[in-house]
Structure formats: structure tokens, C-alpha cells
Image (cartoon, rainbow, N blue to C red; front, side, top):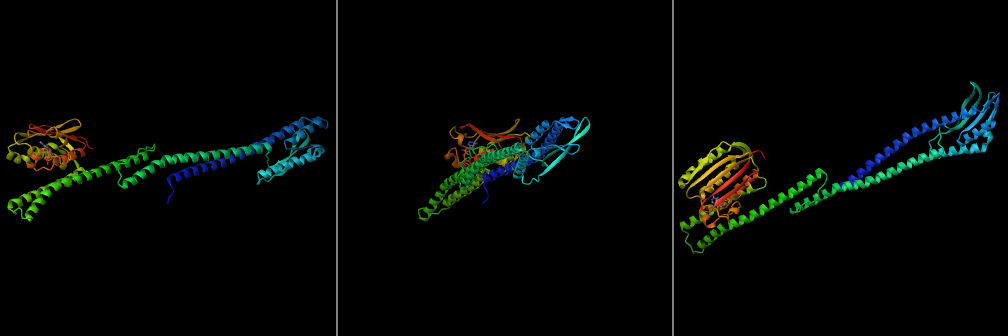
Length: 463
Ligand code: ADP
């Protein structure tokens, strides 16, 4: 089992922040230590300079020193963890911190040592003495020896400062980690919740439940695309499923009648009620032919009505294609005494030539089928974005009641009159499926006993 996305994201956030905090703390400490050491040693030099300056002014002249003031400076120095010893030119001690108060000096020294050793175990401190000449009026009058624990040391205030700084860094680290954790969880939720929903819906889809939809949206574009895709998948599978169900229902309905007729005819012959005359056998044969035609039409319909009707588009002259179709139909029209005219125009279109031809053939054959006297006129028009095809006849027309349903599968306007024509009510459904697959639409205008007009609108541009 792999890690969940949520755990992985949260863990990544925490890891990232931990690395950042550790690196920042390490670098801060490093830079601070360097700067601080620098500052401490500069301060030490400054203090030493002040002490020497102060001692210089205590030389009265003629080998005489203001011992009281020197002592004051010495005591101040002990307070600052420095131990001074002042000697005259002959090396005689004028004032010495250890001689003044050995216990106090040892105490201060010991305190520094233990402070440094406990806080900085790697610190190798030793007692260092720096010698400075005391110069008065350009003449050396003595020597000041300033002792301290070196190479550098921190006093109590410095240690408190460093400790506080580290505590602040730790605090910042802890707060950052907590923020990372919360942020990581929120972010991970934002990403994983819609994904979990997508998984749930995908599972439902795999079980055949296509109607469930994901309402949630995400502010992450890719996840939104995923949600839209899975919703579309559900919708498209649902459509396919409905189509399949409807088709199965329609097919069984359509097949039942001719099969029952055949069955009853055969049973009557078997039971001896009917003689198997040539006439009856021919009638059965016609029924079988009708069934065969129906199955052929169904095959076409399934192909054209399926969601993924593949169009093999190319640019062709629509006027030319219609002219050829009209030519092929001419004899049938002539036999029936109906005239057919086409106002030829050179209009090129980007479409599936075979399927558009099929559309024209369907409309023209319907016009022929349902027109007894008069004429059929075909025309085409190119508009700005669309191309229009008109197929008009002066036939029997379609009633107002039937008009909205004629594009439905297996719909026949009037059963009694269609028995003669033998149509299964599939042609217009196929026509509509092809036109819509091209991004166009088809409509019919008709008046009973006056005639019908079918108008197809196809987009010009490539789709
Ligand atoms: P069919 O194979 O029955 O012609 P169609 O799908 O082509 O099936 O047409 C559906 C119904 O619409 C037809 O049964 C017919 O009643 C009606 N129809 C189609 N075209 C015409 C037309 N030009 N004139 C009158 N009725 C028509």
C-alpha cells in the first residue's frame, strides 16, 4: 500500500519547513557567533584602551601616581572581568588587582571559567595578560598589565543574550512547524478531497451508476479538468446506456410484429388450417424481406446515432454532389410522373461527403415516396457562416401533430399510409444524427396535403 496523497503532502511540507528552520538556525548561529566574537573582542580592546587612558591621567609626575584613582579604575575593571596590574618604569607594582583582593579576583575568574565551560564545552580558555605602555607627555612612565580569560569570553549578559536568541529561533521553528502542519493538512485536503470524490464517482461509474455527478470544484486547474472530464465521462456513458436501452426496446418492438405475423402464418400452415399456396409463401417471403431491410436500417442507425460517429471530412463541391444524386433519381421520378429540379450552385463545404450524400438521398427518396403529383425542388444557399440545403415537395405533407416527431426513430406519421411505402421510420433519424454530428441542424415545415420542406443548416467552417 502506498502512502495517501494527504499524508505525503503534509509530510513534504513538514520536511521542507524543518530543513528550512534547521538551515536558518544553523546559519544565524554561525553568523551571529562570528559577529558576536568580533564585537566582544572589539569591546575588550575598547575597554582596555579606556583603562590605559584612565591610568595615564593618574600619573602626577616625578614618579608620583594618584593611587586612589588607580584603585578605583582597578576595582571598576574587576567588575568588568579584567584584572589590572600597574607597574612603574623600574617594575615596582603600584597597584595589583590580585594583591588588592585575591579572593574576589579568583572568584570572578572562576565564574567566567565555569560559565564558559558549561555553555561552550569546546571552549579552550586560558588566562591571558596583555601589556600596554603608560605614556605621559610622550614619555613612557609605566606599564599596565590587563589580565582576562581569553581568547574571548562572554559575561552573564552575553550568555543571556545568546540563550534568548536561541530560544527565539527554537520558538520560530516550532511555530513554523505548526503552521506547516496546519497549512499542509489544509492544502492536502484541498487537493485530496476532490480527488477522493473523483475516485468515488469513478468507482460508481465502473459499477454502472452514471448519473452521479461531482458538484465540488477546486481552485486547482488540473483537478477541475479532472472533475469536468469524469462528469463528462458519466454523462456520455449515461447517454450511451440510454441509447442502448432505447434501441433494444425499439428493436424488439419493431421485430415483434413481423415475427408474430410470420409465426401465425406458419402455425396456420402447420396446423393444416391454411394451404401452403404460392401466394402465402410469397407473403411470408415479403415479410422476411421487410425484416431484413429493417435489420439493415437498424445497423445503419446504430452506426450513425452512436456518440462517436467518426466524420471523414474533406472539402467538396456540394452543388456537384447534389446534381449527381438528382441524376441518379431522375428515372424513378420520371416513372412516377413527378418532376425534380435542382438550382445548381458551386458551393464548397468541409464535411463528410458520403454521409452528407446519404442525407440528401434520404430526403430526396422521402420526397419521392410521399409525393404523388407535382414536383420536388432542391436548392442550396451559402450564408456567412452556414450553408443551407432546401428539399421541397408538393406531396402529402405532414400533420401538425406528427411534425415534431418525424425525426424520432421508428416514427411513422400515419401507419396506414406508410404500410404502402414500407418505411420503418429510420431515415430521418439517421439524417438528423449525421447533420448534428456536423454541428448543424435540420427542420421541417409542412402542411397536410400541400407539401413539405426540409431545411438543413450546416456550418461552413472546419469543426
Ligand atoms: P420512413 O422510412 O418511414 O420514410 P423516415 O424517418 O424517413 O421514415 O420518415 C419518418 C416519417 O416522416 C415518415 O414515415 C413519413 O410519415 C414522414 N415523412 C418524411 N418525409 C416526408 C415527406 N417528404 N412528406 C411527407 N411525410 C414525410
